[in-house]
Image 1 (cartoon, one colour):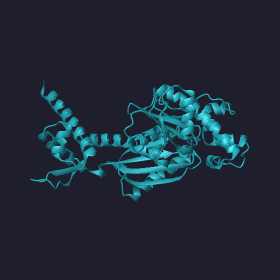
Image 2 (cartoon, one colour):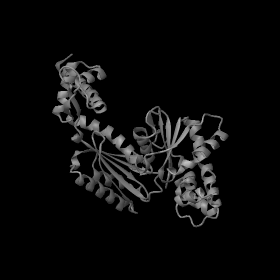
Image 3 (cartoon, helix red, strand yellow):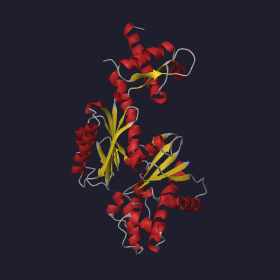
Image 4 (cartoon, helix red, strand yellow):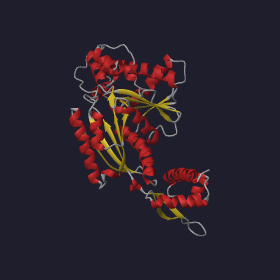
Length: 393
């Protein structure tokens, strides 16, 4: 082996050790050299040298001494939180949310506002909200290592644009992604909002420790995020979980409904209101009105909710037969109010399928599911970038 090959091999090994130790420091902090030796399988000298290197580049710091045991108190180490920052953005038809967190995942700031109606104004609004959040926390823009944008639709990596976001007007414009990159930086990722909600549920909610579950979002749109074998399932083109396009029988079946998706047209928030109107509850203007009226046992609202459960049963039956999840978590502006309908949904599925029926639950993350999923995704990318920035040129 030549001297150059030896140097390359040593550099690669050092990088592997740094990633291994940094990951364990993030998981175990505060932690000691002894504990890191046990958890990583590396030698004590290697762990010590690696910690010194990580401390030198500003990723790790000394956080105190472990007390209470006999003998010399060991030095404790933890990540340096301000070594990098993550911004998560949730873009919806009604609301846009922004979250800022440090490299440990500690949230430093968060804001939520009514969405602007045009895509151009919405892009400006997002940029302004991020700028205000950074200024309010004294975080320099160049310290943000990753930005994650969650929205309806699917990001087309080939065309560099968002597609299938018909319920968010103008969001499919070809200049939207380049404009956001210019405003927020090159290290930006575009994700489906429901996929991110599933990741949020996995990291911070009911999906923790669950290998196979689905997150069913019911709001202004309709979609499913699926975690299989502990990993988010995207599919070949990123469209896994787009149950909005399931061909259900619905009164609205024209070109607009086909483009949006027949199931979403029937079962999303406006579809539930339309069903209530058909059954005679013409005073309902929001899905929440229908849910409240059904709770009060108003006949038209009860019938509208029966239609809604029929549509959701169709979607979930397809999911059960294909994915066999152990848990279904309901969320979204409408889905979070479905606590009274979990048993009826399971009963309908049990009557329809001779298969094991999963547990059902309503998410406890509320409006923050997509933001928290963006945080979980962004932290992985930001930590990797922090390590890359620390590598010698």
